[in-house]
Image (cartoon, rainbow, N blue to C red; front, side, top):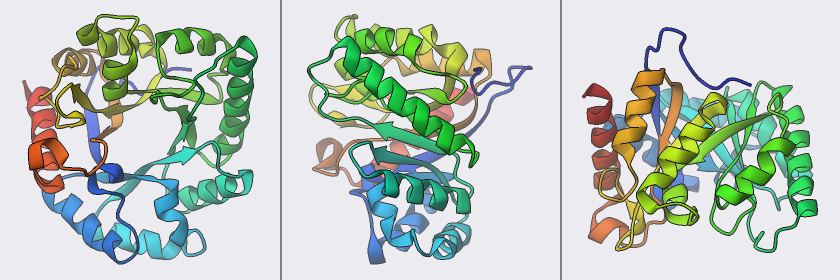
Length: 273
């Protein structure tokens, strides 16, 4: 299955801000957070499913907040350990607000066997079939300590995934931190390049040893310049989420707002150059 590309190599990208960067606002903090994200210049938000549970029975309220802020719900990250019932409810909520990118996270898969790869590939294929009926694309997140942690995992998984049902994404921060089979600065570029024809969605995140994954774009070891070069040369279109992990003294004490501004300004500069 081909990825998100324009035949004339025209770059058409919208940027989303990840809720994790803002300490996952919920309840009374949710709508003010939307307004902050919009004021910085983002086009959408990406959230964990847990933070959207309060809207499962009132999707019109979520749509009202998003419309008022002028934002889209770009993507939802879902823990595979959650129940099948919650999975279907979240997909229904996404469908109700025209959100189309579903990201599955598998945690604590450190002991890996051929049988385990097949088990998770089968699960993802099943979820992908369910989500596509709602116009939603399912992706596997390359997360630390997960079934998609490193290049070896993906070499095992790719033949087992049905790319008519499951789509490919890359989180550049986790690739840079975790893909230890490769030289550090080459990791994200190789991963994206190897599977570019399947690429559907990008989460751009940076990494360095001092601030770990709490690193604004351009301040870490990920070769983002080369990645933006591929984006422009090959014509990626659609959504990119700009992300930092946690809100624990974000990047040398800077606020979430400032870090979000730095990352967005960096991404726009890279696209313009």
